[in-house]
Length: 115
Length: 112
Image 1 (cartoon, rainbow over the protein chains, first blue to last red):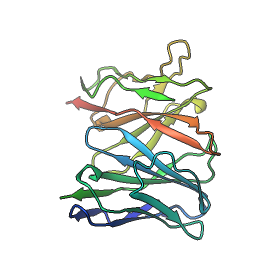
Image 2: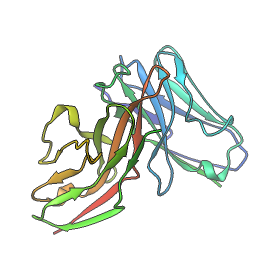
Image 3: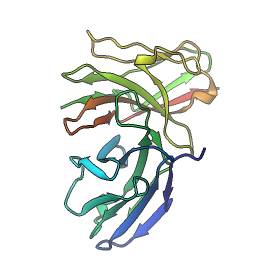
Image 4: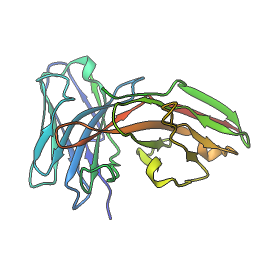
């Protein structure tokens, strides 16, 4: 079946604007994760969803970042008043469940550039 | 808090030579460790996980709890092994979920 998809693949925005990034997980996967990959850095965990709820928001870097998931499927990550340091590749992953044996499958990412 | 360290940003080896990508971790609980790989212009994908004790594409990795290491090894490197490799640790986050913590990655370049 289809893998995790993300849109847009690239987003260029001006500092101060809001952006929305979208993730479509693999059908039937209940767990969904957002990560950020900044230049020269590893992947940084942002937020995790189990169904539509987000029990772990510990990785969100500031209150400008928020995420939601509806219908247990699509998720959007919103960054308000973007800053240049928000420039990164944002990766989404999904897994069947959220347990230790559930493999996370990654999307292709959205490359965000804040000018 | 958990931590994953990959000391080498870049590793270059000749085709046919052995490869070892180093990974060390810090975690107070029982670790679940993974290697992910990202080939050029492809998405990040799971290469192997320690609980499976499997060999994928000729790669193996053994968890050494005494040395807190999970190094990735392959006896004979191939050109198609050139990629970015990430070591990751799955830890219980205390919020009902397991969180993957990644190292910063090692870029493997196999020289023909």
